[in-house]
Length: 350
Image (cartoon, rainbow, N blue to C red; front, side, top):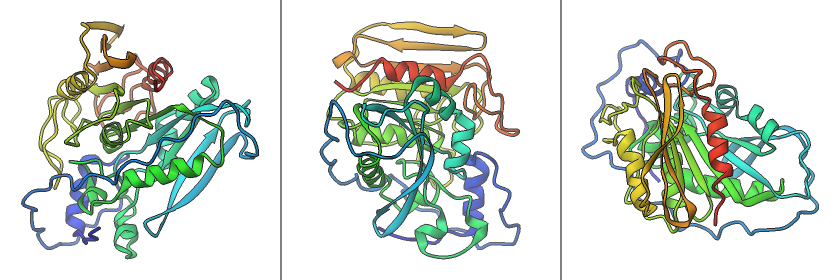
């Protein structure tokens, strides 16, 4: 794995475009002009997937209880961090669903928990919420520069930042995280799901491609299908939320990610998965309130479904979540966290 250093000017440009929330520690000092890569691509595919976690009817000997737990796991010689929220009333002997929620570029696991309000939904619906932390530039290169703290992201294919440019094996990190988590809580391994904002949404799509044997369904918020070739071993249900006026990841697709690649539109992202899932049904309106509506393609293989939720006038935000001051309009007519859980619960892994 390469560990290239990137000038602060480059990383500042990426942060300005993709950070959630905005990065306040960019330098204003003159920096040398970066050399534009000839073909950013998305690097090699991840290593072959491990065997899916075993199914079980009950668990024993697991002691992690309700509340927030900040945990770590070793991967590729680094200590990787993740937060787990276990809901009140959790029974350590009973298999429980889990949702992995990936933060946006420049953010972290704590901010993702607050932004999405996923832990609140976990308390109501009784699932385990997991918030992994992406690496930043100093951690990737083994350097120390506090100005680059807010460069955390995910190697999601065409997106985003140092993790993508250095080809970090974030898929392998998720493998290690799940193996570790399985020793701490009683997982319903047929009900493991992924979601994320922006680069976290892109990364959820990548997990659907490369870890379809493990994840039952994914939900991307303001992130596109940006990894290929995509050859899932089984159908994966996909839900996609996007604002029509997103200024960062354009609803109609584009190539505006600094040092990233061209990405498809929201419509093309879900249409591609409808094709991968062999969906033969028609599009049906499954949600319509105020400025927000969802269209679902049914008739897919193995009871999968593909849904696109569009927020008219929506920005680079989490529908129904906290309202950032500078990412465009955040609708309250659609609660992405609630709707994706309803979608997830209807689509366990076969």
